[in-house]
Length: 80
Image (cartoon, rainbow, N blue to C red; front, side, top):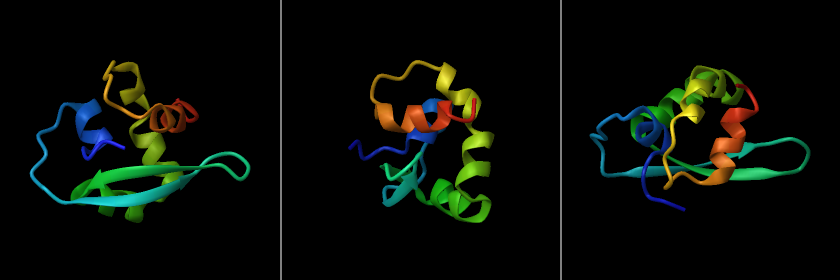
């Protein structure tokens, strides 16, 4: 797993933090996907919840970034 925040990479944001936080997002059924986020996106995920977070960033899946884990893209595409 990349030590970069996929939301920052997809959105073209400059990451201010050098510390990353591990999360687990729940996909359909029993499947889970690890997700590493910067501090600000980690807090945002906590505040919004998984579904609202994915809905907010669903348009980012249209941007090609090769270093993003395919599981993260699948998670965002679910709400696109």
